[in-house]
Length: 81
Image (cartoon, rainbow, N blue to C red; front, side, top):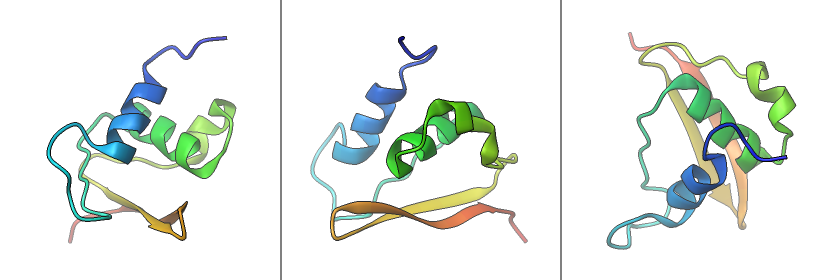
């Protein structure tokens, strides 16, 4: 079954970039909450059925980082002060 939106493409771009090489862990994605949730599921190895498990409010910050080649969730849905 295919995804209703291009999750794999978004994840590949976020994982490997689409421009000049950047230093590790220096990628910013500004996207709709649904896209952000899908990327979180993919990065953390969760099925898309868990999509709504992650809060993604407007203008909130979520941070993923890689440690020894594995994605880790560092910050989820942090609101600006």
